[in-house]
Amino acid sequence: MFGKDTKTPDPAVLSAQLAEIKDPRLDKTIGALGWLGELVVDAKRVRVDVCLPTPAWQNKSVLETQMREVLLPLVGGHQLEFAWSSKVERSRASSSTELLPTVKNLILLASGKGGVGKSTVATNVAAALAHRGAQVGLLDADIYGPSIPTMLGTDERPEVSGQRLVPIHRHGLRLMSIGFIVQAQDAMVWRGPMLVQALTQFMRDVDWGELDYLIIDMPPGTGDVQLTIAQSVKVSGAVLVSTPQDVALADVVRGKAMFDKTDIPTLGVVENMSYFVCGSCDARHEIFSSGGARRLAEKMDLPVLGEVPLDPEIRLASDSGKPVVLTHPHSASAQALFSVADQIASDLAVRAQAMTAKPTGLKIIQ
Ligand SMILES: Nc1ncnc2c1ncn2[C@@H]1O[C@H](COP(=O)(O)OP(=O)(O)OP(=O)(O)O)[C@@H](O)[C@H]1O
Ligand SMILES: [Mg+2]
Image (cartoon, rainbow, N blue to C red; front, top):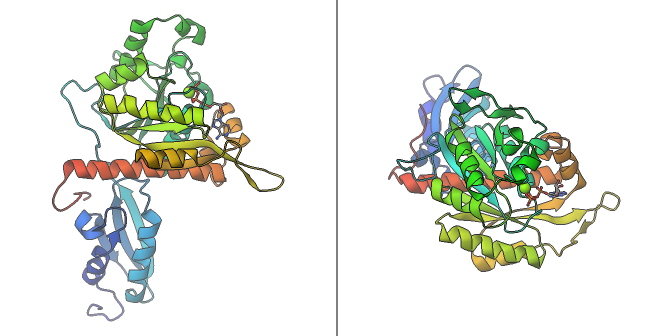
């Protein structure tokens, strides 16, 4: 079990043991997945390098616990250290006319109904993924009612560099919104073709750079914007946001039908304003009878990606220009939103893996 020096753990033995640990989501060993990097043993420490398919991998803490359990009996008095890294893979097909060639994953946050919290979920998911360490862009496709400038607290005008717009950098995100370019009332008079052109430009003529995730905050409904996006880019998946009322849930059915028709996979449903936790009594009040999205999603065979409470702090944070995952990261609301972000990123990593489908699993690192 140990090398020549009985006090020094043998890296080869440790690596072999670690390689047998299974990731519960993929049901494959981390050895087969190629996630184990270098294992360094010095006088005091054992350092394990692990490279995940996304910095938001849902099972990261489960894996760490398993690795500790396996290693602790083998490392004597050495201190255990994990060095985490990640390499996000592309989860969408490429095409020769691709408008966003440097974007690995493209996610739509959508709903048929207005005001259910698409922009709130989009900004928080984007900020959560950036906080985890990913390169993230957020595109406001709501030409008539842009929310991103307010929710992220900036109305800077983008600069132009070599014919391309430079996204605004804020809270670790790259942002683009019509709200940075024209006054809201000016965009209101735009007609369909202008709108389509503006949106196409936001994809083609913005210098997004290398992005692990580009999140598109969609306007409500099933109109021109949805069609333009579906026709001009390959989307990794759409996330439908709904409140628990029946009328909003009916829109989930319509939203899913629209994405099916345009060959965009629906990743799942987020139930927003799912319940309210009263500050004075700590009880959970199900104002709109929460869980409706869960029942519907089950019926439609869609995963529920999270239930986000109705929390005044979410709105206050958005109104003050900083998403709640950054202002109150430990609150129940922020935790729910982090979990939605982790689930989306992990689902996409699984899809990316299925797309490349190498017999030995993911080939990552070094
Ligand atoms: N979970 C929540 N708790 C409290 N307030 C929320 C929550 N989710 C959203 N809000 C608030 O509800 C309002 C509508 O949310 P948001 O703008 O995100 O919806 P939307 O679906 O993007 O609307 P639109 O269809 O107009 O684009 C905002 O004021 C937002 O701060
Ligand atoms: Mg919105």
